[in-house]
Structures are given as structure tokens and as C-alpha cells.
Image (cartoon, rainbow, N blue to C red; front, side, top):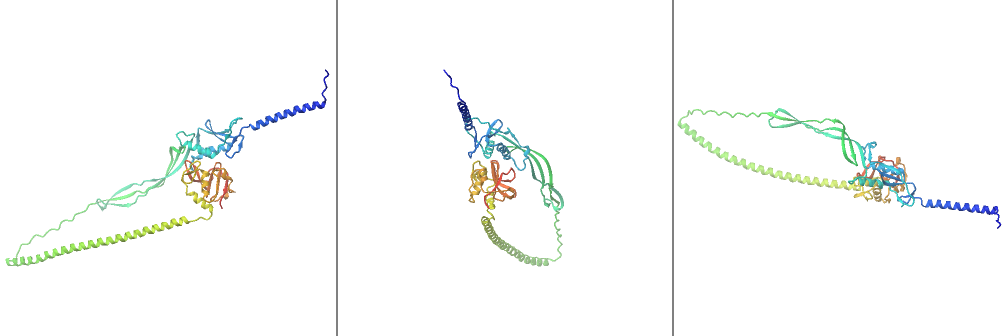
Length: 425
């Protein structure tokens, strides 16, 4: 059988088809790898091909979008137990919290990303149980002003009767400054060491005089001895009669005088009692009148206070928000009195002024007009990574901070500011 020789054209066609097949196979493999590539998904539906994981000890606790988000969680956990007196460089975590790349495998379920705010709230809440997930150890240098009690000195005085006392100098408490180093674990004090103590103002002792003077009793007056009678019997009889007639009226006068004095005393006592009763009625009347005036004044002050308005709606936002300082922090909450988280706090405050905000700190960053921090005014939103607050002026904010501190006032620059948004003029 004669074999037909393949022409160059046919050879080229075969080679092209083989090449095309190889390309199709490669494209198919690439498409398969692309469609089956694992990824993580945020709450907003954003895909992240290379997420990071926050590990507490050896446990993978949270998956986040970036390494920076993981580091922010670590800092916010530390800040949850920090105060203005905390030495940040001395804060430690046990077990250690680390941030590493998350290895995803093909075919596994989608991995959900966790917001920094949610992660921090979960850690702080778990730390309030009998089995905390991490121990945050902080060191604070605290300065206290304490009172120094005064002493009472007693002096003898021969110018005061025995048994009497007289204060000649009142006592006054002093003041001293105590600097201590306080170690806390998850906000609870575990040790305290006094570093220094200095007296700012010495106490003034109270001085009391005690009388030593003895009272001297005056002697009874001496009675003159009776003189011997020299008159005659007639004279004695006349003198006796005269004495009898003189003594009797005197006795009557004394009885009448005593009765008159008693009647006068009774009349005086009645007059005094009547005067005291009138004085008491007048005093009560004055007291009632004063009390009524005080109530009217207070009512007027309260009324004025209620109707008092601030210039600028931004200041009105601040005044309204500051009413809730001291109320609790509750993760996921929006109640300004029963408990709220940071974004729930700002959402509920601005709702009072007709501004609608989402319940998400990251989403609130896109609302309003962006301004620089140097131009921030009271009522502006201060946005952080995983947190949001309301600027109140003079470098301070009011915010729902943490479960352990609740709604409070802090320095605006206590952490890195991402942006400032103006929602009201």
C-alpha cells in the first residue's frame, strides 16, 4: 500500500489544532483555579482573598480583613482597661494576642470577617466571666490628695472656773500628696505601692483651755449679840405693845406683797408665753414664705434652664449627648439610658435632631461632610478604626466607650483619628 505524503499545509493545520487544544486546556485549568479560589467575606459582602487571623494564645479567635485591623483589635483591648494614668508601655496581655496570615483551602466554606468593634466587645464581655479569655495587666501611676487630721491640745488656765473649757484656736486639717503605683488585671486592682508622699499643707491643731480656778465661798455675816435691857417694866410693856402693833401690819404687808409678786410673775409668764407664741407664728409664717419663695425661685430657675437654648445646633447635640454620661455600654444596644454601643450612641443622639445614621461605626464614616480635625466643631463625628464618638470641643469627645466604663468623656486624640464628619451646622 502506498503511503500518501502529508503536505506542508496539512502538517501546519495539525500543529495548529494541537496548539489550540493545549491553550483550551490551560484556560480551563486557570478558570477552574480562579473560580475555586478561597476567600473571606465581610458584612458588606466585600471579598478578601488574603485575610488575617487574630490569635489569642494558640486559638484562632477572629478573622479580619488586614493585618492593621488585627493590630487595632489588640490596641483597643488594651485601651478598654486603660485610664489617663495608665503607663501604656507597661501594659501586657496573657496569653499573648498575635496577628498572622490566614491560610484558606479550596473547597472550604466561606470565612466571615469580624469587625474590630465586635471583636473587642466580645473579648471584654468574656473577660467579665469566671473564665476570661485574656488577662490585661496595666500599671498606673496615681496621685491622690488626702486630708491630715488635726490634733487637740489642752492647756490649763487659772482664769477659767474649774470644770469650764474654752476653745482659743479652731483646728484645721492639712493636705498631703501621695503618689502610688497601682497594678490592675482586667480593671481590678491587685496591688498598690506608695512611691512618694509629700505634705502640701500642715494641719493646725485645735487648742482648748481647761479651767483650774477654784471658787471662794464668802463667809456668813456675823450676828450682833443682844444688848442688856435698861428700860423699866412700863417702858417694856409700851415697847412690847408698840412692837406688836408694828409687827402685825408688817406681816400683812409681806403677805400681800408676796401675793402681788406671785400674781405679777404669773401675768409676766403669760405675757411671755403669749409673746413667744406670736413670735413662733411669725417665724413659721416667715419660714413658709421663704420656703415658698425658694420653691418659686427654683421652679423659675428650672423653667429657665429647660427653655435655655444654645447658639448652633452642634452645641445642642453636645448638650443632649452629655446628659447620658455614666450610663452603661451594651454591645448591640441603642438605648441611651439602658445601654448602647458606640455607633448606637451616635445614631440615637443624632436621631433626636432629625439625622438618620446606620448602626455601624464604619458605615457612619461616609455620612455628612468631611472636615479636618483642626477645624472640628462641637457636634462633629470623630471616626476611629472600629469606633465613633461625638466631638464636644476643647479636644474632648463623648462616646460609649467600653462595657467597663460605659458612656464617658475622653480626650479626642486618645487613639488615631481616621476622619471627622460634620452632620449639622
